[in-house]
Image (cartoon, rainbow, N blue to C red; front, side):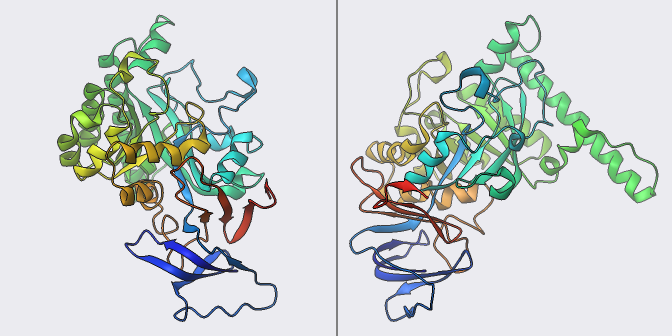
Length: 393
């Protein structure tokens, strides 16, 4: 297809008025001004003329529980937390995500083309997140990256869950100690495996430790649930001790220690701020956090934490962060190229560049404004939502 007209926000620093995007075989083939990119549709190719709209990369949700905590289904549809064992790194989100959850269609209607989905925060180690496209029936066909991160959690959630069972962890000290022990055992296992490969000696594979190898090699990050200042610092301390990549998820008090987070070098996934302060540890959450972190030089993106805030509210959450100080241009990047960078997939998505996946969202205005409509959502070069038809296709 060819997409013409409108304002193209490439997220590479270039805005193109009345331009052309050529898409074929699920990829972006060319982006530029009219005349620079010839619009010569062949048989079977469609031309979409956007006129006055905004054309941008598909929006990316960097942290949610869509399809793993289903709407409308209570316990029967809640597979988010295995709350009988605080250490469960071997759990895989892909084995619990139901793509029939209504939230997937809501995401598509909002121009959200990819979502990072995984276990919740009741466990010290919750399991493996997966990054999926948002349109399709079979999870295996939607995978962009799996595993994409290893979920760990600090603070109130593991404490409340396990102290109620009269077992560890019931303190923040125990959470940190249990995580250190698990990482130490995983590191020892990995060293023994490498030694056996060098020696060509027998080695018994352990399913509960194999899942840590992508974390230890730096292929995927820790995904750290941390709201309070002290929990954020504990997460940083442990990641630095073991030399691991990490994202700081929620980071509700991050605005209080923005310079320290910048110095540590870990990116932040802020939110959900469009929710009540239902726990003590989120008493300081505010929409200003993203802007303060961004201005300090921290790579910052924004989450709904669906279903805590609904997935379709993601652009509005970004808009509220812009209202509270996040620069508008940075708001656009927060839900596209910054999200892709934080999730380790900026080579495939997050900007409109030749060779990248043709995941494109087209709006009749700024998507951060409440009255803006999604005109089209395109995933892998296919139109999956058409405003005029009023349905996700």
